[in-house]
Amino acid sequence: MKFSFLTYKGVPIQHKAIIVDIDGGEVAFRTMQTQEIAMKLEGVAYILKDGNFNKYLKADIVYNNFSNNTVVLNNFTYLLNMPASQREFIRVHPEIMAEVSLSSDKELITKGKLFDLSVDGLGVVSEENNGIYAGARISLDFTLEILSLNEKNHISVEAEVLNIIEYSNSYRYCIKIFPKADTEDKIIKYVKDREVEILDSLNKNLEDYIY
Image 1: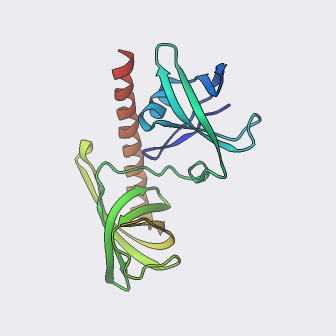
Image 2: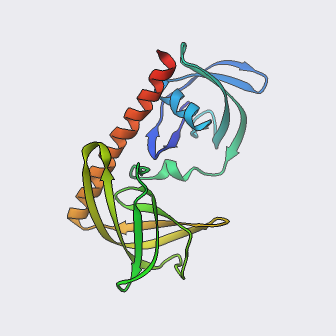
């Protein structure tokens, strides 16, 4: 079977796992160390649908044993779907949550913080709505920054609001973007660079447990 851990800062971490022991409601799996550390850092595991399971599964982490690459899970629950597993492009979480301006007809509607980004979409979190609705065509402006490379790129892009998730004191806008060729190149490079940063960070966390 395969674990699916597709939400570690947006980067897919997915490896095969083997069941090595079952004790009551607890199941021990052997998997790759990168998978194990990703699950430990997030405190939760996901299992993809396969020949063994016809639904997605979510489980809690009981404990990890990095010396023999095992992780013990319990509290298994079925999930109706797993949207992150269906994404065509990697959507990374930024190190710096850039300020995003949302405009319509060149007039500023609201501002928010960049939550995640891929070449075809992004998420913005804001405390304001100001009349934004699903289906609205808008323009976005923000700056992408990779601190380790000392790089900054201004992004201006046309977009469409696909969905709005309302929380108690904020909104999360799920937005499809339509970048021109030069803007697309900047976003692709940013996502690749950020993916490298995230995986490097994951491996450094792993070193703390195995050395």
